Length: 381
Image (cartoon, rainbow, N blue to C red):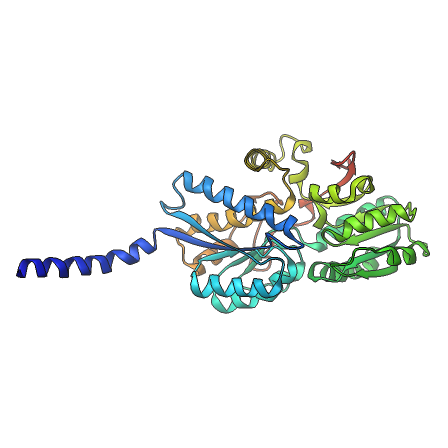
């Protein structure tokens, strides 16, 4: 009887010792993505990409012999649900890093929580304000609106276009873009002759475009993500406005072309090379990884890639690289090694993070493209 009692006690304490080890057999990484709601055309490919990448990494043994456990919450493009998701990931799930959110506004709403918790957040949203000024624990993977605006303005000037109208959405992405458009225009010798705004749920922007038509604008620059820009593209054609229309990198998906239809023809925008991977030179350092990503994604999901799925690929792979570099899953070590990342070849460009730059990309991450015959085409310099 005494031996049985000792055996039970030994087994109990053995289990107590083993349980924490079991709990550490996976590396918990969180994701907050807009899989449903108005920004679902951004968030769905992000979710698909993150799951595909997790499976690929785990099939090869994971990171340092541990599988990735990816905990994804759909914020439904709702800022309040993004906040709730952040709380769950930080307090309940105890993740070591989080990728997302999808949208700039949702990122603004939660970034302070990550600063207080000391957990890295790698946003998939574009607004420059997410990382400017630099926040210790916050990074982002999409190219910044400043570089997109600079790319557009340079092309306008090459065509001797110096008077433009802007039309921007009133959400976080649009407001951030509008500020940069208004800041850089006078610095680059461009005059804003109209400054119109629309709401993210608006379905007709005829009134704003009629005002623009009454000015001497030589081109229109629209800043937003679908569906608004597609409506503007259609309204522009319906009103017979013939001056060039430029869009932000927020429409770099086939969904925009699908929504805008024939009205998308001839529209210009700065975009990452992921949507024109076949057109970039073979010697370009991004070529091989972009072709592999496109092949993997389209084979698995039977749908075209977009720049936005690529932002999730970059975010998750940057976390993986930081863990592998530091051989640590401690959030502070991951953050420190993220900041030391140099020359990382991603879908959005070649990342070079520093203590002063938590985006790590510049204007060279973009190609100027035009939509022709329902597809993207790089504009030759």
